[in-house]
Image (cartoon, rainbow, N blue to C red; front, side, top):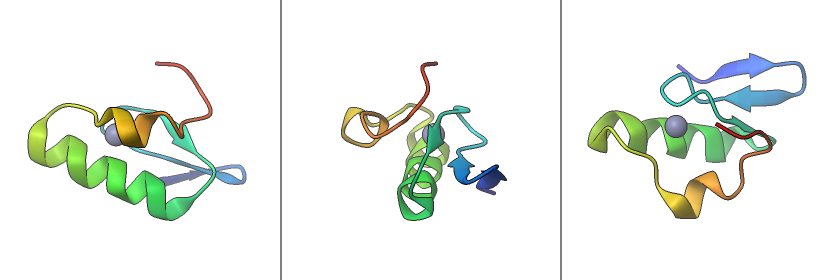
Length: 49
Ligand SMILES: [Zn+2]
């Protein structure tokens, strides 16, 4: 489940935070499926791992 953090959205798998819920959801789906992060997605993250 993507978690809402203030006005942003966190991927519960990798804990990265995104401004767009849709991107956080994509990240989470990818993280769950591949057990790794997609660089094309995580470049949109607003925090560092
Ligand atoms: Zn993720």
